[in-house]
Image 1 (cartoon, rainbow over the protein chains, first blue to last red):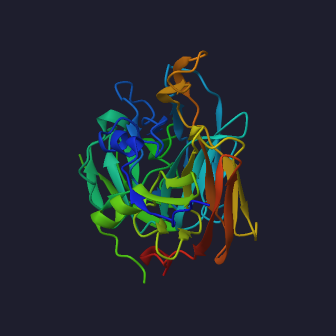
Image 2: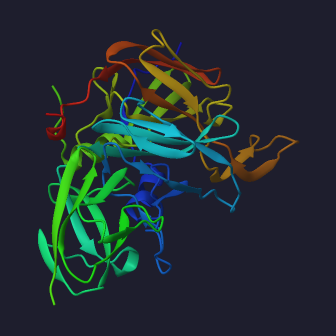
Length: 220
Length: 160
C-alpha cells in the first residue's frame, strides 16, 4: 500500500479574505449582523454590532442572511452559552458577563452564520439632552438650572469604562417633586421632563443596578 | 502552551488545515472561523488538538480527495466521544464558484460538467470544559481524529 505520512498545510480560506474586506459581519460572511437604530432616529442606517452588551440588557439583533445569488433564507437565533446570553422571543437578553456565540440557524437546522457577543457589567450611567439622532453626546452634569415651563428631552446611556454599552436596559425614572412632569413616550431609555413655574427637584434613574441623579432648579 | 493573541496566531489558527493522507486519498478539515479576543478556537497541528473556549462556536469545513473524486466530503459526520462537551450542528456554506468533473482523456464517454459545488462542514459549539475524542468521517477518505479540548473562559474584569 502506497501510504504517505500525515501532512499539514496552511491555506488562507477565501471566506476570511472576504471578512478582511468587510463584506459582512457574520464570521462565515453569509450575513450582516446589525444593531437596531435608536428609536426615533429616522435617518439611521443599522450599524454593525461592535459594542458589548450591558448585563441585564436586551438587544433586537438584526441578522440578514447574505447568500450567494440573493437567496432568501429564514433564520432564528440561538445562543452558544445560556449562562451569558439567552434568546427570548427573538430578542437577545444579556444574562451575565462573558462571551457567547450567537448562531443564525435556518429552518433546516443548519447554521447560516455565527458571531460572538460580549456581555459586561455596567459601571456608569450618563444622562444626555435629546434622544436618537438628536442626542447631545456631552453628558448632562449632576445639577442644572431650567427656565419656568422649560421642556427637556433626556436620554440615558450605559457605560463600562470608556465603552458605551449596547442594548435596552430596564430603567426606573422618578422625580421628587411631581410638579416636574416626567413623560414616558415609549422610547427606551428616554423621557421628556417639563419644569414647573418654580421649585427644585431631584431626578433619579435606576438601571442595571446603578443609580444616577440630576438636581433640577427652576430659575426666574 | 497557550498561544498568545497575536495577529500572527489569529491568522494561523483561522487558516490552519489538518489533512490526513493515507494511500491515494486524503481528508482535510479546515477551521473557517476564529474566536473573539481572549477566547480560543484553534487547531494545534502537532498535537492534533482542537481547543475551543466554552461558549465559542467554530465552523469547520471538510474536503476529500481520491483518485476518482475531489470535493466536499460526502455523507460527512462528526462525532464526539463525550457529547456533553460540545454541540455539533450542520452548517450551510455558500457554494464554491465552480467544480469540474471530467473523465480521463481518451475514453469514449468523456464528459465535462462545470457548475457550483456544495461545500461540507459543521459548526461546533463548546459547552462544557473538558477533553474528548472527535472524529470527522466521510466515505471519501480516511477519518480525521482530533482531541477536542474545551477550556473555561478567563475571568473578565467585569466578573470581579
